[in-house]
Figure 1 (spheres, rainbow, N blue to C red):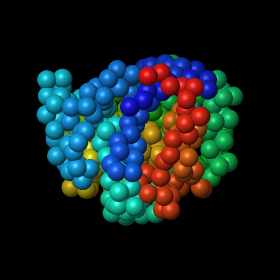
Figure 2: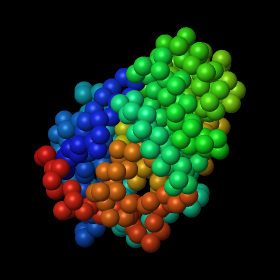
Figure 3: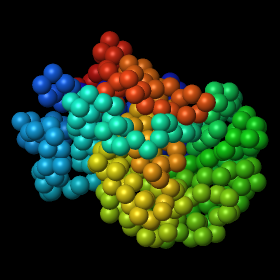
Length: 354
């Protein structure tokens, strides 16, 4: 287990939080001469729990007894709770187990999961509220020039200025690209409904977390009254299948999001995908593009992935085998086993904290 802390390339903020660095907790698990790699983006404290679970639960097990290992981890953390950093620690280990299993089978992870498609669209994600107009325009316009068909920006820090910033982004990308906004729960229901109609005038077709994702009643109210052309999305803070089921039962979203670095790993993401299948709901992955490209190419309801600026930058820097999008499509490398990632030790070493 290793913990890395990587400074951002510029101050970053959304509607409810600001940060200048990102922490990755990385797990490697050996079976014979094969090594599985997994990770989560979480506080360094997550790493201590990862080490405890590796020592007490994972070591010595059959690598193909994945389900038994996963259940044993959940039993081990019963008194700590199954959400938050507990779920993120389990996620990192689960992701490494999936990578290891595919490497032992000597096939890409997407093939071990069962391929549905060879590639999946991504949307460029950033547009932080800490950016000035020039930074916003350059980032949004840069993704447009690279062939992305969708981009997303952060809103919510200064609600009165958000309509103007959205117009800046629209001008930078032109009329043809889809423009998404992410409030990170910054608005009230009334604010969000008013802004949804204002944003729609600029062609915004996706409003993510207009209010807190825990406010299912509020999300449902917004979903029922937002412009018909606008998706309401949430789910990135989901840790369990029950969370996702409650969100969909409440008719809170038109697209569910899930994050394999938080929701119990790829196993948890598959649970979310099964719920989406049963309820005919589109699914989109949150952040960590390298962690999601294989599983999103293996589940039927996945429609696209988030290509988050901060995480894409780290994964490109840390991993040999990072899959660059081509014309807005990210595809697994079918020539590599597992997730196809190999750590660039020299690149990562300066950021190692424990």
